[in-house]
Amino acid sequence: MPNQDAEQSASLERLGQGALVAAVSDGHGNQRHFRSERGSKFAVDIACECSADLADRLEAFVDAKGIERFALTTLVPTILGRWISAVDADVERDPIVSGAESDQQTSSDLPVVAYGSTLLVAVAWQQWVLLAQIGDGDILALYVDGKVGSPVPDDPRLDGLRTTSLCQPNALDSFRVAVVDRSLVDLAGILLATDGFGNAQAADPWEPAVGGDLVEMIRSRGVHWVEEQLPEWVTRCASSDGSADDTTVALLVTGDAP
Image (tube, rainbow, N blue to C red; front, side):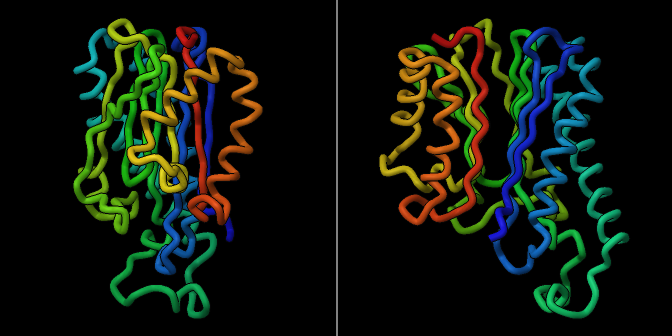
């Protein structure tokens, strides 16, 4: 306590019917990151704002390589730059002064460290799904046949104890991106989850079992039933019977879902 996760989503109507952006973020629990609850909230809000602001440019792309390049050279740097600016403005409004907060810092920590957070983003429009991630957590592609994929490249630095972060000096280099072309695969949906979700699963590996179950429940029970149940499932994952960690999930379901 408090919950240091955050989530946000927004419609991107300029990119066509059903276009949207969703983001989840996990503020770090270590005492050095004592304002990470704010940092995660800034991250998801800014990711959605930047995606909306750059929507017109996304519409012009016709291939996955161009979208991926745009993400790495424009969208991700814009998100990171605005997040740092939001942190700077927050520190100016509410300075870190001597006392309970500053006592949690190390002597070398810049103020931005207090706001350390991960970020997972999905932008979906037309045939495309752009995915971007820094830090731990999971992005799963759910396919109509019940199989799952992990489109975003792995980061060997994420060992379950350490994570990359928006607050690091080299944060831009730590983002990983991927583009899913729905014209080439039968995509049922995309799952974004902070690490509390995966850490709560009993199966190892958990991704095929959970992904397959979600697709089957969408097929048999319908999207609205899954939507109603999702908060309860996530709460169970966050409980002492699960990971006992903040847990946030965004589930995007395509029109191709069974």
